[in-house]
Amino acid sequence: MTPMVYLIPALAVTVFFLVRAGILEKQRQIYVLKPLSTLIVIAVASLSFLQPEWNLTYTVGVLLGLALSFGGDVALMFEEHRRAFTVGLGLFLLAHVVYAVVFGTLGRVSWWDVPSTAVLLAAGVGVYRLLKANLGAMRLPVIAYIVVISIMVSRAISTLSGPVFGAGQAVMIALGAVLFYVSDVILAASRFWKPWRYRRISLAFYYGGQLLIALAASLFGSAA
Image (cartoon, helix red, strand yellow):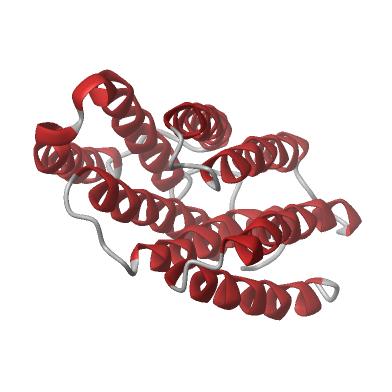
């Protein structure tokens, strides 16, 4: 994992300035820093190919999810335009589908699914009730998004009992998915409930989650 030692602090720096640019509404800086941050995460996942042991399904799946996320990130830089927002939402929806398939394929159905499904169901209903008054024509797409991201988080948690992952590796995947979920809730609440100047803090959760999912690709065969 030596090469990643340099990429992780680099990501921390770009995300810090990205959040700052978002709060200060420095759009030109966002145009540079946001794609760059996602490319760094893609590089982290790609480095797994240099490890002695890696899982083709996981690494390729995560890279596909990150590629879709990259497209979503670019589209959402223009989120004030409804079409761009819809495209970004769709690309992230597909990214969650890919992640859910990968995590579900390598994970295992277990007792963890009972409490996690209950919590995610309650959270999803709560988020929808918070947003529904202002959704308008976006009601069905948002419902679909909530369902899919909830399934993705559920399947990420399923890796905790799967035979493929080490304990630390599974925790990173599950935590990464949860952070991704939190980032989307913050953005959705700011857009459809109450506008929040500091909503760009969600990017710290988003990139933290994506980084953990990407890092896990290099932990196969380790005692993590």
